[in-house]
Length: 260
Ligand SMILES: N[C@@H](CCC(=O)N[C@@H](CS)C(=O)NCC(=O)O)C(=O)O
Image (cartoon, rainbow, N blue to C red; front, side, top):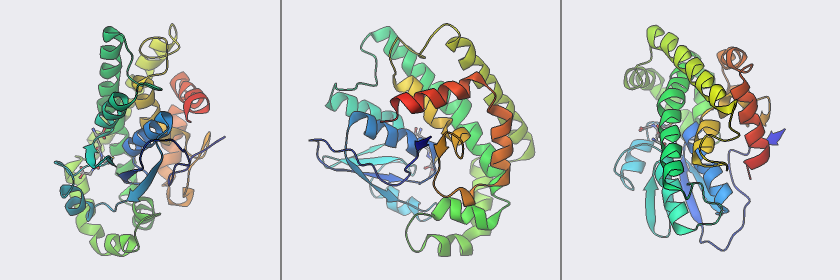
């Protein structure tokens, strides 16, 4: 079992220290953490709480989402841009294939991972989790700043309304999200029948994007996820539906082999 340390990386390198602004259980932030570990960048995390994060992130970046990396006096927002930035900084353990056509394929898979896995999986998770107030609060705020649970307790009604509306969470979209994820897993499995990796013949940003955005499927199984007590019962049901897919087995293999 790979130990899934949500908090801190232990990697040491000659590169200057970095800080990753994150939501602790966001799969996009897992993509950024994996990138930093893979590139050998030592970093600290700053865990943010949804809601108060808006004013904090606006001070350092254009949009309000995380992950945001602070490195060398710069702020880089978004997991894809963090990969671009670190690959430009150092060609060691490059995640972007050097051949132009493979780099393009990798970026296409990365985009596919975001729209066909990252977004629907998040929608599905919150579709269930928003109804479980105490688990939701732990899931979003622990570990995190002292005021996280306090804030979320007070803001629960308003925040869940905002989350439902911004992510368009409703029954119809939850059904559609399940289908989208199934289709994506099938498409990837078909590709993997004849290829070891998604783009080119090496592990790349394409594989890392798909694997990290599917990482919640491994929580409590191959990945010893921190804070399982905050996971909704429904997560287990979602996992049961998809875990038999060969794509998930491949994700587990990639974690075993490439999650440095
Ligand atoms: N394309 C971005 C997506 C990141 C994203 O959607 N982050 C979510 C958390 S899963 C977020 O920060 N949402 C809050 C907001 O947008 O204010 C990436 O790859 O990093």
